Structure formats: structure tokens, C-alpha cells
Amino acid sequence: MTKTIMKLENVSLTIDKLKALTKNDEESMVVFRDCQLDVDKITTYLDDVICGLQEVHSIIYNHKADKVYIENLKKCKDYYYNTGHLGWEADSFIDATYEMFDVTIQNAGEGMKSIFEEVFGEGFMDLFSTQDDSQHEFEQHIKGDLWNFIKEDDDTLYEAFLSAFADNLDELKQMLDDYTVKLVNVHKYVYGYNHSQFKTVYGDNIAMIKCCYFENRHKTDLLRNTDFMGAINFLDETIEKKLLSCESILKLVDILFEDEFEGLTDFDLELNGKTKHDYDELKDEYFDFHKSVEEFHLDLNDLLACGNYCIESKEYELLYQIAELFDKHVKL
Image 1 (cartoon, rainbow, N blue to C red):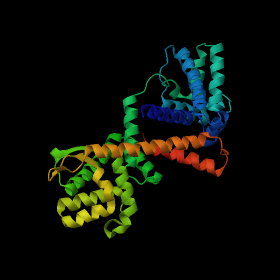
Image 2 (cartoon, helix red, strand yellow; image 1 turned 135 degrees about the vertical axis):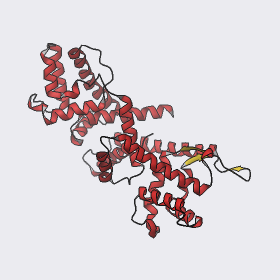
Image 3 (tube, one colour; image 1 turned 90 degrees about the horizontal axis):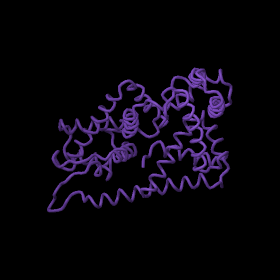
Image 4 (tube, one colour; image 1 turned 180 degrees about the vertical axis):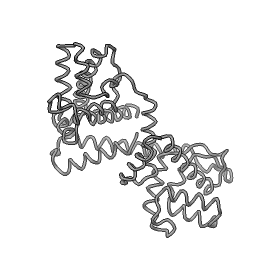
């Protein structure tokens, strides 16, 4: 399984690099076609471009360039297409990279530094040098958690949240943590355990509970048009202020979240000598689910790479869109 996970991580990194180096989906497809839909060939091609940038960066700034920072790579690409191409008339960012590599290897003079910064923007200076990895990881983590509370296809609301909290992701994290705490409080109430018995919240299960909610909310008049966060607030307040009977609350939770709600947290609770949650059974269920997701992703990539689909066909476009959605919403 470890080898499979590593392979998937490499595929994900290759996709990130491809998006960082290409202008749009059309240009990405050109790279796919040129590399015959072979992931290894695509990886080698992209790494060749980045290695050229790495060598140039080392020459210009007189240091040993190490890890490329994908976010700064995107900044360089975006700057090139917005402004830099006016001073360096290559057809694409990748072509410009190759051309400037050739020029730099032949003439490593001081003047090349200003040319690169004019063509690729200020992001080029930090491309291999400075980046707060911990901050970037924090941002990615928060952006992923946000989807746990928003309907999958509501890109507009998702972007609105990111925009509203763009300058204060800590505040966004606090908001999501608050909703998680409220959800755990409801869970404690439903299954009758206390804080000392509580162990872990499963983030993946929050997303599954949310999906159940959007599928089932029409079944109750109380929350028919309420979003997931609103439902969490409603249930938490209802329990705290005893606005409904315990029986009504349990029934409402059962309707909205079905059996998925049971897996929100890991806790110890003895009932007639038997543990409410059998950890080994849950672990087996998790790994079975994880394995099925991995197999789906591998099958999807096999379909994309098999060569039986015309790249311009609707079938291939659909497969490619599914792959993009998978990479966006699923983390193995």
C-alpha cells in the first residue's frame, strides 16, 4: 500500500507542476499529447523544464538552488503571460524557459538577472530560495477543511469564504474549529459519552456527514433550506437550550445524518460490558474504504493512459474532469 500511496503522491505532484507551467487546460492537453499520456514521460518533461530554471537560478543568484516552490512557479508563469511575454516573445512560458536557459548558459553576465526578473516577475527571485513551507501547508490544510462544511459543487461560496478570510486564515481556522466543536457536542449528546471518553474527530467523516445532510435535509421542515453550518448551529443550540425533546433530537439527527454520524469521533463507552465502538472493526472498515478509493483512482488513471480514447472526445474530456475533481477533493 505504501508504494501505491507514494505513486499517487508523485502523480499529484506532477499534476501540480503541470498546472504551474501551463497557461490553461488546452496547453496542458498539448503536453499530455506530446508525452503520449504517459505519466512518467510527463514527469520527466516537466522536471527537465524545472531543472533548467534551477540551473539558471543558481547561476544568476550564485547559490545552490534546492526545492522549487510551486506557488512561486505559478507566479512566474502568470507574470509572464500578463506582462513578461511583451519583452520576450516566446509562444509559451515553457518555451521562454528553454530559450532563456540557452541564453544564460552562453552568457551568464550580470545583465541576465534583470532580464529574468522583468520577464518572470519578482516570484523568480524566491523560486528556489525562500518560502515558509509550514505556512503553505497550513493554508492547504485550511482550504481542504473548508470543503468539509460546504456543499461540494458550491464553488462560489467556497471562493467567497477564502476571499473574506484571505488576510486572516487563523480566523477561518477558528471558525471551522468552532463548528467542529459544536458537531462533537451534538455527537456526545446523541451517544451519551463525556469529554474524558472522547478521543478523536475524523475529518473525512465530517465531509460524509455533510453529504448525508444535503441529501436528507428536505425530509424535515426545520432545516429544509438551511446549509450545513446552519444545521450545526441549530442542533447545538437546540440541545443547549432544550428546545426539543431528546427523542425528537435523536430522530432528527438520525434522519439528517443516518449511520454516518456514528463514525464522527472515536470514543470509549461501555454498555453491558461491550464497547460501543470496536476499534479494530472501524479500522478494517476504513482500510477497506481507503483501498476501494485507491483502486478507483488507479483504474481512472489507467483509462486516461490506455490510449483508447480520442483526446478531443467527450468521453476523454469527462474522464479528465473526473480526475481533476478527484485530485481536488480526495486526499489519500
